[in-house]
Amino acid sequence: MMERRLFILQRLSAMVLAPLVLVHLGLILYAVRDGLTAAEILGRTQGSLGWALFYGAFVLAAAVHAPLGLRNILREWTGVGLRLINLLSLVFGLLLAGLGLRAVVAVVA
Amino acid sequence: MTETLTVRIWRGKAEGRFESYEVPARANQTVLDVVTEVQRSLEPALAYRFACRVGVCGSCAMTVNGRPRWTCRTHVRRLGGEGTLTLEPLRNLPHIKDLVSDLTPFFEKWHKAGGRFAGTAGRQDPPQRVDPQSASRLAASAAIECINCAVCYSACDVVAWDQDYLGPAALNRAWTLVNDARHGAREETLDRAFAAGGCASCHSQGNCTRHCPVELSPSQSIAGLKRSTLFGPPKVGEPG
Ligand code: HEM
Ligand code: SF4
Ligand code: SF4
Ligand code: FES
Image (cartoon, rainbow over all chains, first blue to last red; front, side, top):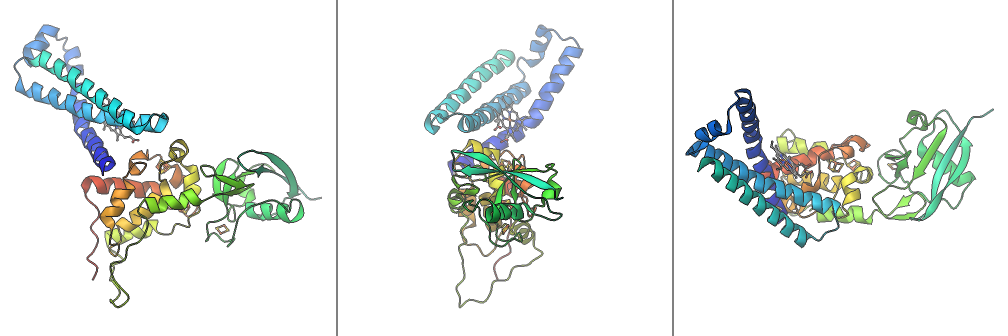
């Protein structure tokens, strides 16, 4: 049952990521082409609940999706025991979530 | 003068060597014909396996020029090996002797994947009705004619990497049961197909489908199982 839940989590988080990645890429193109400065970008993101939610969701989805993918790779390609792999993936997920959310706070707070 | 065919055959178990034999090249010969000719006229101790010789029993599969194939219906001429043939036992399975692999792990995984049918009706009950045109029955029918040859299992790289992976044939079997209105343990089969080493390990590259001699698509069946776990199992008609 656990494997099935993890599979569902990984695929659902991928479905969340897909549109977010596209918007994120579009946003990068827009910011670069318009030559926005860091100050201008921060001016738009600070205090914006919309961007906070957008990047918050992005970070959380990536923090679920990527560690589960990493877990699959470690299982398939290393002889490491499943318990250690679970632990490593969990730590990686928490790290991604922590660093990511800190970055979100830095641009919207 | 007769043309000859050079056949390199694996002799031994995990440890062994290739030995070369020369047999006449005939206009119409299958790989199994060639092995039989070698065994009858050159190497009586050669071990190999077959039964039906017509593509039904699934017992004659070997690695032919590096690829898993059923040998009774593989014509030498169509392989284009230019007068040579290299034969080994199926990979991803323990080797017993020469061209014979041990299929025990392959069949154990059928059970592990929830492949055992659980009837819901007894012999006193009327036969259950299944609409042959229902979506679930069509899905089951598309995957049902597996001859248990283990060609797909041998073709799958994930099986080679992960000894616990259930493999394409077992999961293909599970998919037919998940679509079978008469099967009493559809949820359980889905759970088992998703336990550690199940569907989630498949990367959908389709080497199984590419090699299946009866043109089933285990990769599509596995995709069906994955869809079922995300969006719910297929609707099967009420057994009536
Ligand atoms: C556009 C958004 C994304 C989609 C649609 C997506 C989809 C998928 C899918 C379907 C798999 C399973 C592949 C398989 O089992 O063969 C996968 C695996 C994986 N993904 Fe993503 N992904 C996305 C973004 C990301 C991001 C942003 C990361 C990293 C931060 C990531 C990291 C991984 C890793 C490490 C794997 C494991 C590779 C494997 O199992 O073969 N993905 N992804
Ligand atoms: S599609 Fe899945 S089962 Fe088929 S060969 Fe690839 S990994 Fe193996
Ligand atoms: S799915 Fe095809 S290749 Fe695999 S065991 Fe069945 S018949 Fe053989
Ligand atoms: S001998 Fe029966 S399938 Fe080849």
